[in-house]
Length: 228
Image (cartoon, rainbow, N blue to C red; front, side, top):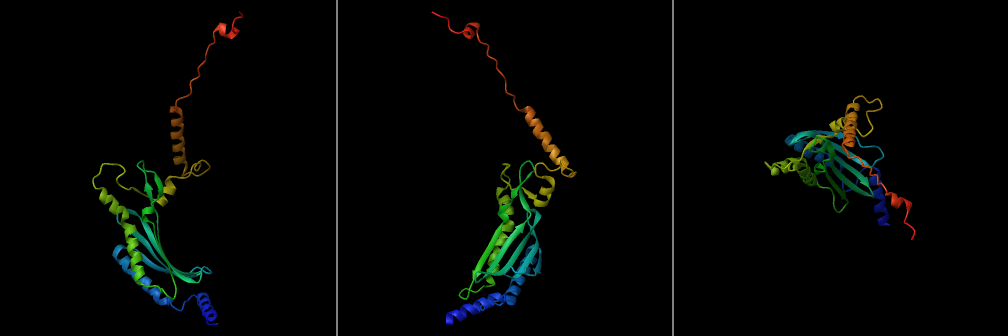
């Protein structure tokens, strides 16, 4: 009977966005204080957002406009507390707009070196600790500065692949539209697509064409072997 009441009280707490071992307002304030302290050191703006309805979220806090020390681009640290599977979860994720840039200036895939995710599940035996936010922000700082540290380690290397080059997602979408765009009324994308078409046509013209070889058969072979 005691176990049934304990489960019932836990599910009641979940339905009310609270847990017996968790005080939402106090923990949210701790998260905000630590994010603001981090923003004062590196830059950015902390903002509290309303939880998404019917999603299990308890609170959401963002650190927006996070700068990168080696160049352009901005990031965002998203901290979310939510309930799922009868447990309290805390998630910290870094989002950003940076891409790899190739040697010819083209934008490539997402610059995954900046990606970082911290997820923890809590219960009565392991309640959340504000110190874990500091540990998570240490991971954020490593992800934020990883390109700068790698490029500094490359030093004066003459290898074209020694340094990581950066492109931004917004400029990449504007400058490199998908194949086929720009031919159906998209005036901004048309020059880029037409330029690609010109390059492809030139490559096709430079491609060696197959040579047809005609083999002349001798008259004797054409008439077949002679009869004995």
